[in-house]
Image (cartoon, rainbow, N blue to C red; front, top):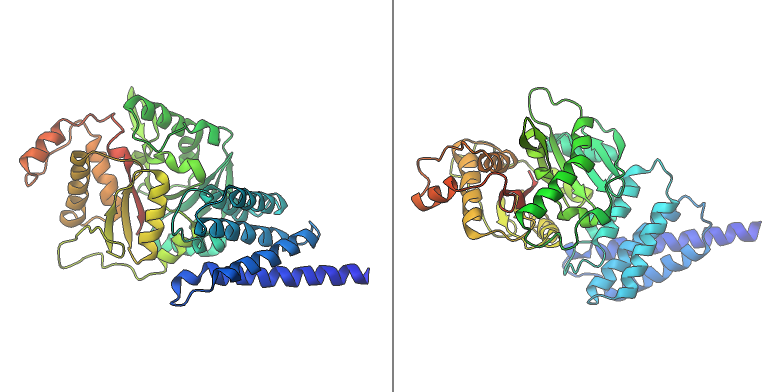
Amino acid sequence: MADVDAETRRARAQGERGRARCARWLASGSVERPIEPASLAEALDLLTESLSTLPPTDQRWPEFAYVAGIAHAAQAERAGGDARAFDQARTCLRRARLAAPPDARLFRAATHVAAGRVGAGAEGMPWRTLLDPPPAAEIAAALHRLGADALVQLVPGAAVSTGADGATRVLDLPELDHDRVPAGGDRAHRPDELAALCAWAWDAVMGPVLAALPGAFGRAPALVLLPAGPFGAVPWHAAWSLVDGRRRHALQGAQISYIGAARLLCEVAARPAADPHPHHPTSIGRAAGDPIAFAPAGSHRQAWRLGAEYLTAGTHTLLSTLWPVDATTTALVRYMAHHYLDRRGLPPAQALRTAQLWMRDPKRGIPTAMPAELAAQARAIVPDDLTGWAAFTHSGW
């Protein structure tokens, strides 16, 4: 028995050393002299050996496996991609989830999110934003600072919701399955494809999620969605149901933002808030680090990478797209978002939401200052065509 205990202690110590080295390496993107890649390989060797010797019931096993999965994925991305390494990463993350206690809801959701990033072709992916899933209390504090009511992580079969009150709840969603998201969901959709996808999104996810939210006392509840893997291709804010013969979209009942990782949400919320009453016109920039930036994406994977890149570079608010959008629609959304930001003084998330509601309103009023050519295009908007306004998303403040 003494020999077994000694072996367990040795394996645990090796795992701890490997986990710490992986953490330092993955965080090295923020230091001037990054740790050599060989350090990651050595850390992975230590972790792999510890996982082969630790008893499955060891309480640290899930954490070691999770970090090993993140590190394998980061190493594979850095090396240009390797199918076997990606499979190893997914295996580690899956085993971490299976070994975790059922009540470790946030940890299990984190394994789903991390697995969804593996092999996404994300050059320069900031894996450090996935390495350290924050506890519920830290998420609650971040939500409070951002003025949001809940972080909702969408994983296969469930929504894991952490509220600003610090409570974490799991809502069973049996229809939420990767196979239900159409192949090629990243590409520019035809209106009928998007309409069908968003109808499913309401029935399977957004209807139950919004119904389960506590009241927001006179205002629309504010949600931050963290979709795992292919679920990121769905414009959940555009999910709809028929009410009195007309489509009612999720964003009519809630303000919906997106984030790529729970840790990234906490990092952004920890920054000083921008001046809510600036004494100069608000501008929407293009560069990473601009306080408010617009970075259109060609796919949901690119949108997540841009979100991580811009937000970690210091951008407070990022507006992006889930698929390519034509120049005229983009100009309209940007014009109206800026209109509500600068002339109405709305916060960025509310400004984008109000611009999208304006676009889907058949009785929309045209601002007098809008250029004539743009105004003509605004009058021709088809409210139920989701290929335009539904592509636009908000992240951050």
